[in-house]
Length: 134
Image (cartoon, rainbow, N blue to C red; front, side, top):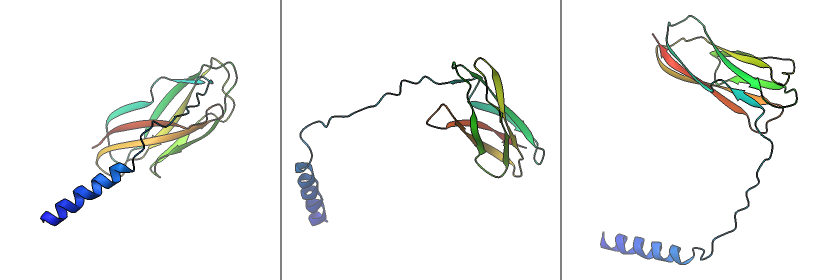
């Protein structure tokens, strides 16, 4: 046991000797494009819902940019969630919504997501809804 402890200490000391003594330079690229969508809420708690009865959840948003945006896709995190979203461009200042319909097969707590890809955004937006199936 003593040999294992001494070996571990020696290994740790030898690894520390290889660590860098200087701080590496970190380059961070800042994207100057502002977000083009303002969400009313990116997370919705639906509370208690009955088992086997589909529940629609609406995520409302406003196009805050000066150009029309296009929603490329809205994908539920499982087969129990279907989505509907505007297929035509959303004009500046216009409010629209994405509807997620959740069909709860199992009782208990749940958390589901909808991944939204937007033409003006590089990273997809992750919308979340949660609740309890009774």
